[in-house]
Length: 201
Image (cartoon, rainbow, N blue to C red; front, side, top):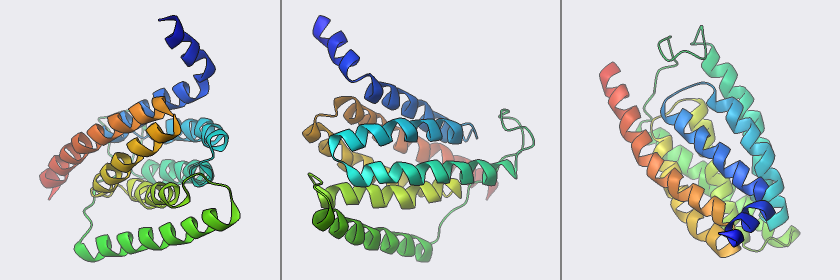
């Protein structure tokens, strides 16, 4: 037990970031606008964690998360008179057709290649292309969340499933547990959002 407390003490920033991120994904599933405030805080903490661990794409991605959190708050607020109330009007869930999905996957692949090459040739990233895979996917999926697109949960399922192994390999165990939770929550999030989307259709 003492060794566990010692590990938590030595890695308290990562533990805090992972804990806050769990709140973030729960709020995402429930479509609560406060997810963007929590996401902004999580991005600040994880920028430090990733920088320390050599995940440079992940570190840079946190700046994007901070910006998209502001955008997401503004975009969702346009359809909610009282952001802290689940009973008020919310931005409706949308469904991406096949054409849009293909475009989004293409953007993901292009970003993956560009970021991967940059990390491989310019930085000392320990796993440049896998780091780039998660980062580029996160860019696309977070934009989809900001636009409240149902299929963002499928993107996150793929990203988080791959990320579990990456973080275990790097010794970021709290973040590895977080990704396991994320992967499970992506399934629940998709089912919940799909049910609500079908009710509106």
